[in-house]
Amino acid sequence: MPQALIVAHGQPSSPDQAETALAQLAGQVQKHTKGYEIGSATLAAPNALEAALATSPNVEVIYPLFMTKGWFVTQALPKRLGGTPIQILDPFGLDPALPRLAADAVQALANQKGWPLEDLDVVLAAHGSGRSRNPATVTRDFGHALQAQLACKDLLVGYVEEDPSIESAARTAGEHAICLPFFAAQGGHADDDVPNALRSANFQGEHMPVLGALSTVPELIAQSIVKALDLL
Image 1 (spheres, one colour):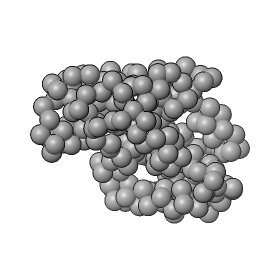
Image 2 (cartoon, rainbow, N blue to C red):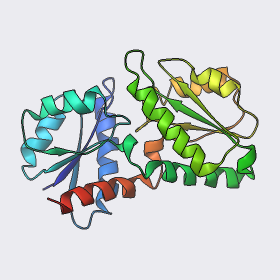
Image 3 (cartoon, rainbow, N blue to C red):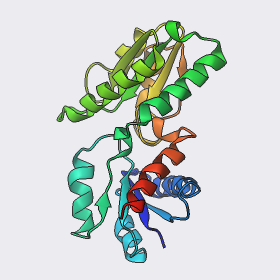
Image 4 (cartoon, helix red, strand yellow):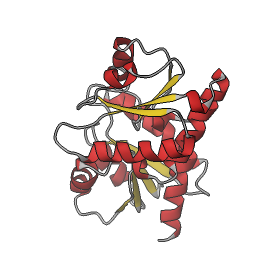
């Protein structure tokens, strides 16, 4: 039975699709966990988390597949746990190794295109929030760390739910540009709002998958889970 669960927001409009995608990610993570078993559940799928916990009494750690330590991680998730003594790790977006992982992926694409980093604009497309400053702060901190790793020409940040918009950020990018969506999973904003904003901006660069879909992410997640479980 799983000793750890990966928990994500999911998609209220398509909960089963998000559950399937997260289960596939959990399977990829498990390949790097030294024998630990990894389960998964989304908050949007009715009773999915509760069912996962009921069938997995050995769960000791939850890994939140979220970009920030916001309301879902600090309030909604603990409430759904109902006092069960399970350690909630820091979310995906706060992993200190994430900027290096992202920089490697951006650099690999730039190299493939033959674009020198000193000529490269990176558009960091993020969710943002009209109510809390925390998502923008996390995004900016990540952006500063990413730019320091890449030494690119410029790093332009745009948001879905606040200014500056993704469209305005992308409009200022040059011909040698890469858009990196600062999202944990595909779906919703990442599938619709980001590409629509890039089209409206007449963005001529490359559009990467969301950060959480990069091929090196399962190993990164596994490292956090294994470290926590080894300490218990």
